[in-house]
Structures are given as structure tokens and as C-alpha cells.
Image (cartoon, rainbow, N blue to C red; front, side):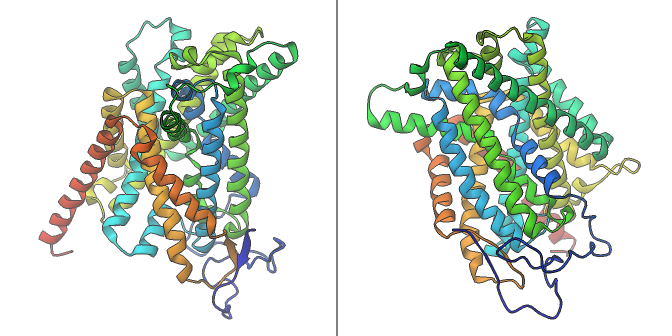
Length: 476
């Protein structure tokens, strides 16, 4: 049972740490939330908007592009990896909820790592992993954009790699233009991608009512017969499918712009993960019901195959266009996140200071955007959807393992306000499951570890260069 806890006795200041009113176990506030601190960020995000933000951040490329690759690993029982991934996501989401309630600041995993372990290099590694996960996710989206969804509209006339690179460049240009334009675009695209998934569920409901589909596929596992092969196959499919659940961790960076974050975040994150998890499991059931797993595996636009097989006269080109909007939204969010994280680390002198430069007129982090876009171009030039999605999942599973451990370590650091506390068993299970899914037991190709290693080597190289420069200037 989850509870709200109080740390040290409250001081005379009713908002001693977070600037928020205390919250009782019934979820009611004893005092109205105060205005934002002078010079701080504007608290403009309410509960409903935060829920929509979480849902929009999770939905996207994962379900639209990697469903077929997950089916290729597990077979017709496509819904199983998504159901397991949903459970793993809830475990880690509970840890994030406790930590954001305890420390309602816009720094996420890096903040929690630093507070728990007080090791700057580890904090940097976690922050850089989060940034790189955004890049690999955006690259997977770019690959999905250049695949079968676009092919439905263009008859495969253009080279996919070239399209993916141009796609990244265009998103970088939009990002360079300004955050206002990027956020407004994100709102529209979130509604579009949710509409696409509702269409899939509607097609599935029609198929069930008319007796179409093959229910026997829902319990078929692709395996050579051994128990170990079945286990690694399911773990591998779950690790890849987990890519569809990433995004909720980004929402904690909005803590300083959220009204009463101590109260708002538990509901928003749990509702957001529950809604998307339910949609994902239902979409997986519909996909397997209507399309053979080998057909799904062979397509970079698996949900388009579902539309074609659904027996509903829905325009294929229109759905392909909806899917393109969905993967564009995922890429846009992740390019934004990665460039801002790069900018923040430069301002904190963790990365070279030059990477924190902004355009004088637009006030956008120009060097950060260029840097992350170049890395993304390198990724799309050397990887495919499955490998890039798996790289994203691997990096974030490593981050999630550290966050789950951090929440236990930080139990020794009480705070002066009430906040959500997750049962101890959940972060323990969250850390264990994250480590298992990040391990070779998940039957992950070696290229994923190599790609992640190269990305981290780039980060460590920048860290070393920055330390040497600071030392030469006598600032270290």
C-alpha cells in the first residue's frame, strides 16, 4: 500500500523545501499552494495538462514502429512482452514519483543520482545516458519515418537513409527556431498519434464482432522448444518492447513548472503509464489477432499491416500519414530533450562551456542542437529501427536501475514536507527487473552494446577534455 510520509518536523515555514502545501493521506491540501518563487519558473501546468503531457511523451515510435520486431522475437503472443513491460514501467514509475515528490526540481535522474551517491562522474554518466537515449529514440523514429509508412505515400522512391538524415535536419531546424513552435507542434502531433491508435482499436473491435482474425495466434510463442530459449525470447521481446514505454521519466523535468507537484505527479504519472500500457496491450492483441507475426516482423510499418488486414475500408494512405505524424512527434520531443540536457550540462561546466551557447535572437541552444543532431545522423546512418530502439531501451534500463537503487539510498535523507512513498519492495523489484532486461539474458545483439559503448565513449571524451580545460584555467 502506498503512503504519504513526513520527514523531520515541519519548520515555521509552511513550504520549507518545495514551495508547496503539505498533502494529507486523503490527498487534500491543508493550505493553498503559494505562487512561484521570484526568479523561478512559472508554475503553469495543472493536473490534466500534466497527464496529457505524460501520455503524449510515452506514445509514439515504440508502438508504431517496433511492434513487428517484438513479434519477430516472441511470436503470436505479442501482448505478453507489452504486459510485462507495463509492470516494469509501473515499478520504476513509482520510484520516480517518490523522488519527484521529495525533490520537486527539474533535473530528474541526474539530480537523484547526485543526491544519493554524491559522485559527479556517475551523475554525468547517468545524465549523458539519458541524453543518448533520447538521440537513439529520435534516430529510431527517423528510421521509422523513412520506412513503410512513407513508402505507402511515395511508392519507395527515395533512399531510406537519406530520408532519415533529412528528417533529423528538419527537426533540428524546427528546434532551432524556438521552443514555442516546437511545443505547439508537439500538442497537435500528440492528438494525431492517439487518434491513430484509437483507429487500430476500433478495427480490432470490428474484427472481434464479425468473427475475423485468428485467436489461436495469441498464445503462440516462437521458440525452438527449450525452456531457456523461450525465456530469452520473451526477455528479448520485453526489452525491445520496453522502448514503447519510455518517456514518463522525462515528465519529472517539468516539476518546477507544475502546480503543486507533490500532489500532482503521483496521479499524472500513474494514470499516464496505466493509460498507455492498456492501449499498448490492446494494440498488441489486435495486431496479433489480425496479422501473422512473420508479416509484422517484415514491416517497418506494422500497424499499417493491421489496417490493411482489418476488413474496414479505412484509407491506407491516411493511416500512413497519421503514423508519420506519430513518429515525428517522438523524434521532436527527444531532440528537444537531448539538446536542452546538453545545454544544461554545459552551463554546469560538466561539458565544454561552448556547448551552452545560444542563438542571440531565438535564444535556442544552437551548439547543443547541432551536436545532438550530428550524433543522431551518425546513428541513423549505421543502425535500423530494431537496433536503435533496443539501444534506447538498454540505456534507460541502466538509468532506471540506478534510480530504483537511489530511492532506497535516499530514504536516509528525510525532507520537511509530506510526499508519496512507494512500498520498499517495488524499487527492489524495479532495480532487479531493469538489470535483467539490460543483461545478455535478454538476447540482445552485440551491436546494441557496441553502439551504447561508443556513445558513452564520446561522453567520457568530452568529460575529460572539459576537465583538462578547466584545470588549465585554474577553475577545477
